[in-house]
Length: 166
Image (cartoon, rainbow, N blue to C red; front, side, top):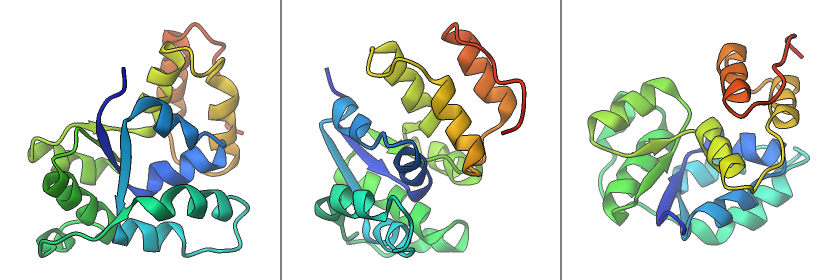
């Protein structure tokens, strides 16, 4: 059973693209949408090795918000549009990693999930064999996840901890 509509912010998109796991979004959700501000952010650097995958995957999923974006005063443009689009489309989840933006979203009663939570669910559902190699890729590509948190998830899934900062 899939989990309805998810609105994705840029951070998780980059993380999933780096580990070549964008397809997990199709496996876990009925529908994926992103606001125009996130599209602008994820397609800014056209020379990255994962740009083409991101463009192909997300281009048909871009939606322009219809409301005025009053949240740009307290958070990033993409994150604020993601919250607004979540509300406008009555989404089930907001895929977001930024701690401040997530806290604000949760204060609006928005159901949030982060990249690591998504990967943990995918592992539990048998969509991933191992988390550890993916977490090592995050560390090697300067994705900012706490080693302590990564190891806690590895422990929960009975995988070997990471003992170094890659």
